[in-house]
Each structure stands twice: as C-alpha cells, then as structure tokens.
Image 1 (tube, rainbow, N blue to C red):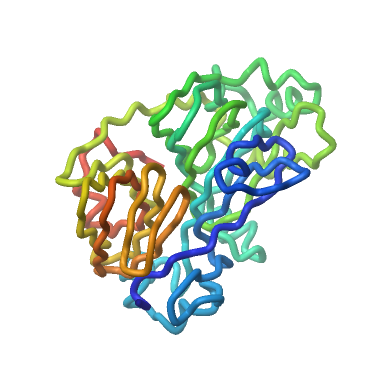
Image 2 (spheres, rainbow, N blue to C red; image 1 turned 45 degrees about the horizontal axis):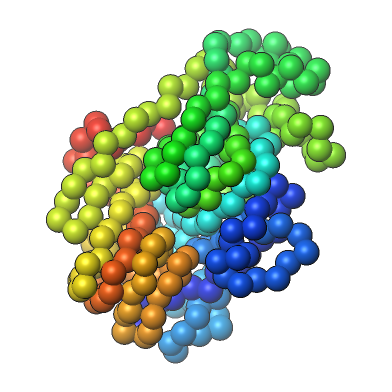
Length: 320
C-alpha cells in the first residue's frame, strides 16, 4: 500500500529524559531516552514494498499527489512536519524558535523552516514555562540570561493530562519534569537556548533575542470541536491537530489537500498490514482512506489549505 506508510520510530537520548518511553518499548539504555521520533524525513518505512527506505528517498517517487496541494505548494516534496513523544524527568532548557521569515533568510543555509509546535499531554501533570511575566526590554532580557536571573521573569503554567498547548514561533518556553507528551512541529531544528540551569551547553542569546516575543504570551485555552468520530483540537497555519476515537471499526480519510500523520496514543488497533500499538505512526497520502479495527485513541496532524484554515472557529484557532 504505497498510499499508506507505516514508519519506524527512532529513540533519542536526552540528558533530561525519563524512563517511560524505554519501559513502554522494552528498550535497554544506559542514558535516558527523552524523545521518540515518530515521523520525520529520515524515518524508515516499516513494511510493504518500500520497507527499509527512508521518507526522504521515497517522497519524490510518491510525488505531489501524495503530499497534497496544501503542503506541496509551500514545502515541495518533503515532509514538512515532525512528530515525536517526549518524556521529561528534568526541566528542559528555556528556549525560543524562529518563524519562517527568519529561518528562510538568516538561517537559509540550514534548509530548515521556522518552528511552530504544539504539545498534547499524554500523562502526568506539572509546570511549563510559557512566555514572560511582564514586558522586558531586549537588553534587560540579555542581562538576565547572562547573570542567571532570567528564571524570575518567566511565566510558569500548570498543565495536566489531555491538555493541548500551542507554542507559536517566538514564544519563550520550556517543559518541566514528570510529563509524557506528544509534540507536532514544523520540520526544523532551529532552537535558540536562552537559559539552561548551568548545564555546560551553548546558549544562543543573540539570535534568540532577535526572534523572542518580549511581552507576556497568554496561554490559549482551546475547546475541542466535535466532528463525527473525531475532535479538532487546534488549527494554525503550520498544522491542524485532531483526536480520533476508534470504537470497533473506523474508516479514516486524509484531507484531500494534505497527507495525514496518524499516531496511536492509547489502546490497540489493526489495519491491513497488521497490528498497531502505542506510538505506531502511519503516513497517509492526501485524500486516501484506511480501515481500522479495535479500540484505540489516535492523534492526527496535517497541513491545512488556506480555505480549510479560514473555516475553523476561534475556539480552536491559534494565531501565529
């Protein structure tokens, strides 16, 4: 089935990682596994006639029809989204990401886009950093980052299971400990660290201060929008995030203008090529349908066309 690809996940060790991903997957690792990369352009295909090849190898063969008009018109023959699980045992660095305009000019040599992302809390509850507590001049923020007082200027929010947190480019943010979450983001590795609790890692203050929003950023409280077998959780220019309920049998179709990344986050399911379990992710071609059976919960992400995006209500819209 070339129009539906099952992807092989890649575990990634992180200094702040926990134990839940390794335990779920039965992995042995001396270092903590902080991330599980579920869908990105270097993922290998798990089964079928393209098994063993990476997405970056096969997407040119599958073509624009597979990617879909909405994604192809902006990004060409690439997978413009990255989906992962994160397991946090410690605070992640305080960081910020650029938008497309900055990435495509100042960081053009990297080949990356900007980085808007969103989190869905799978398990746990705890604190995150989300923007500043009050407006702060750029020079004052730089001084606070250098002298270690930046923490006092950051707004901290309490988040809980099943909460959706949009993180538009330019938002100063950090994940706290004891969280297991799903993340969808634009395909980009442009991360500017502003503060790292004394860890011996590089900071990126000059670029970070150029792209950061220097005023408080209220955390949006979105209201899921029911739509038949699913709920629309979040809609922004970079992606739409949806939650699907499988109760016995479901025919699920990707939007006509975009591929769909479908990730199982609870329960178990079967599709034409076999069983699906926690973290298994399918890349479904634009407009294509699959049949699922079982009892499961999925998250899905795709790139919206301007027409689709304009049709979403304010209760799920996030302005970037």
